Amino acid sequence: MKKIAIYGKGGIGKSTTVSNVAAAMACMGLRVMQIGCDPKADSTRNLTGGQSIPTVLDVLRQKGDAMLSDFLVEGACGVFCVEAGGPVPGVGCAGRGIITAFEKLAELNAFEHYKPDIVLYDVLGDVVCGGFAMPIRGGYADEVCIVTSGEMMSLYAAANITHAVKSFGKRGYATLRGLILNAKNIDNEESLVAQAASEMDTQILYHLPRDPLVQQAEAQGKTVTEAFSASPMAVHYQTLAALLLEDSR
Image 1 (cartoon, rainbow, N blue to C red):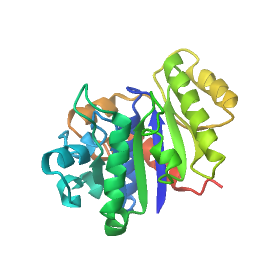
Image 2: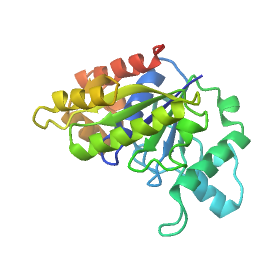
Image 3: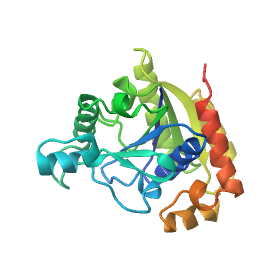
Image 4: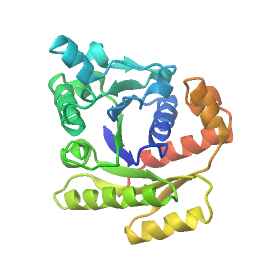
């Protein structure tokens, strides 16, 4: 089982990237589990017809306990979808919520039961507190990728995440695989990201071009892989999926 955490600033297209990659991997015949680690709980919407699924924390609040069937939903292409969820707005800590959700997944032996070939964690990267760093420091993920554009705040968030990964990497936790450039078509974008990657001592793992089909697919509650499987953009996600499956060593 390979476990990859994909981080990025809010609004950078991280969840879109993760769900499209998950669908591409599932279409390769792999058993894929996608775990959304954002209190907005919108990571898997493109895999569930645009519908929200029950979150781990919502189920725990409502029932006091949970079974896997209460919150784990099989989405498009057979991807197993989980949303950690978050606290009631204005009350509680989102990071602590992620820790609680991970503990519940472990308690219920989710990985042993569903036996995924690959687990993708979709993690908000604006703040890398203890909870949001769980995939890095808790031994849950083997590798970390960061979705970014050439915009300053996106690169600033990427630098913070890189610092966190490298700090924990010294203890034998997850390693940084590289940056995924999700293009916004700003001036000199690739060179800006390449310079930032050099300063972070990492690489641009892949360049995803901007394509209106991504938004058209999302309007249908689908991934590009599902809605426009023969398109060049679907091929980009398939190529990135294959790259992530390779041994990084």
